[in-house]
Image 1 (cartoon, rainbow, N blue to C red):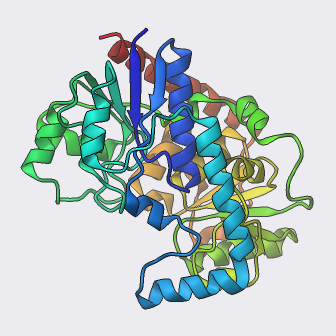
Image 2 (image 1 turned 60 degrees about the vertical axis):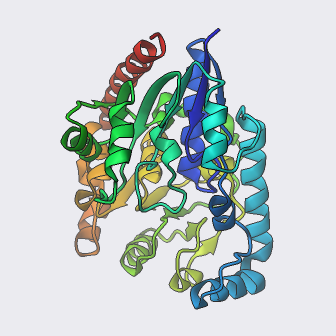
Amino acid sequence: MKKVGIVTVHAAHNYGSCLQAYALQKEIARLGYDCEIINLRLPIQKEIYEVFTKRKNVKYILKNIYTLFFICKDRKEKHEKFEKFITQEMRLSKEINSFEEFEKAADEYDCVITGSDQIWSKGIEEFTDAYLLPDVKGVKISYAVSCGEKISDDFTDEEIDFIKNIDHISVRDSETARFVKEKTGRDATLVVDPTMFFDKEQYAEMCGDERLIKEKYIYLYTLGNSGELLDIANRLSKKTGLPVYISNVSGTHYMFGTKKALAAGPKEFLNHIRFAEYVVTSSFHGTVFSIIFEKQFWVFKAEKDERKRELLEQVGLSDRSIEAEDCEKKFEQVITSERYGQAMAKIASGRERSVGFLTEALAQ
């Protein structure tokens, strides 16, 4: 049986990063391959997600003080739930901690896949050339990789050559496809994010049938820090009479006026979206799971972010983009079951096309 290794940001304590790695591994195993995630955990990545950071500037000192006095227990529980999910739900190689160790480990596989998520973004602190698969001896595949919201000009000629030498290139969004074409002269196949390999029933089984937040609520999920987004969620709260729950504290103003569900690992995150009455998000994967669970949801300024704009366009839900000035009008727009039926049909079509790419590339 052909042995396949995946290198990605699987160990980031980020819901989307974790769940995309899990889903891609499961799909490749379903296709009949011996698949494991190459357990590359760089020191910088571990540092980013520690309960208390060792960084010394004022921003991180204040963050540690806030954690200590307000959310220490929740942060510890969240950290434990992520580590449990990573170690128990994913099939991992032995842990490696450097690019040099990755090069040696990659030789054990007949095929190595890089992706998914923003692993070709120079903006992420965990970026490493390992995600470009240099000197890998087996078949090299990129699956649904993205350069992120803003494509960097910092790629060296050597790094562009690494991308050129990948045998099969697929990407998650058109901006990354244009980057590949411009820099390498090669066409990249557009595929769906791995989280879209699973349907609502499969994710429901993962997160359980018991709602973790007992009252009805609005779920606000953002990785950034936007007072405007919080204002939109609070306006929806005023309109509906429902409280706003969050799982991430992205800024000091999020401390007040919201309810906290901070001790949430990947399964808890899915549960919070599944049982929410409404979802307000600025996240790509927050958007994905809102669609999969067929929620009434809105995406903050999706029209100004190519990745989220394109995702909504692909499933026929472009009207879910929202800004503060039009939010009252947007709140009146309901996604009907008919529209969701059409969206699921489009996801199924994209899934079939994407599995076809993987099947052909892995068979080489």
